[in-house]
Image (cartoon, rainbow, N blue to C red; front, side, top):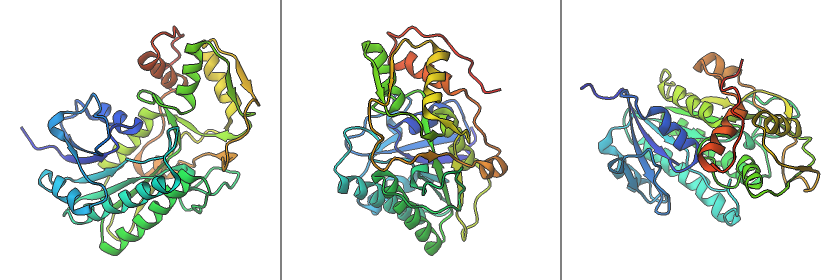
Length: 322
């Protein structure tokens, strides 16, 4: 049997994006995946135990030793801290998101023929009140966004310094299968299951949400794309590009899946450092990766409910965008 065309080292396989990426490549003979895990990480159901290695992310040489025999063609760094509640201590969050990214980049730079794919975030951008482009400034006080922005900048500098092929992906908000922790849509479904009202902010903020499987397909498209030149990072926003107020977005999804719940908009204040306009301009990803979201967000929420909240009996919405 021919060797896989793409040999991917993946961190963050226990998170939503990592697990969706594993789902995408599970039956793809052209892709082989090796998972790097923290000591405390759970192993995703789709993972093969002999393809999982626990490493010390504070030690780049430990990372190199773990992956060099695998001969990766791409190192996808999706592991991060800070999006679940309760969040880690501020300095622990910053330390992991910056240091682990630098160490993984350093390790990838030491492996001949390996491209580093850094998974950043749209939260790293300055709020400009319009859809954000890849060349817009990274500038935020949001703790998670700031830590990812710092890593984004340093990784690009390191890749340039050491001649490592680099792709930076900046996903905006997403949900779907495996989003089973404490973010917006799991919290909404949990409240519906428990029969309690769901308290929200006023919902006037403009938000860009995607199905997690679409973001994962964008990551895979970047991995499989033509190799970037060593002297230039390729940077792509991944999002829906839709400019919808959060209140309307949630009300539409609740209606599409017939979720019986009372929504209490305005019951909570806006989160500290929350941007009021967070939308991706995805023209570059459309043009260079031939990527765009395909799945209806309500279907992603329905799938999440089916897998993680089976007590809820919901209407199945359309799966694909028109």
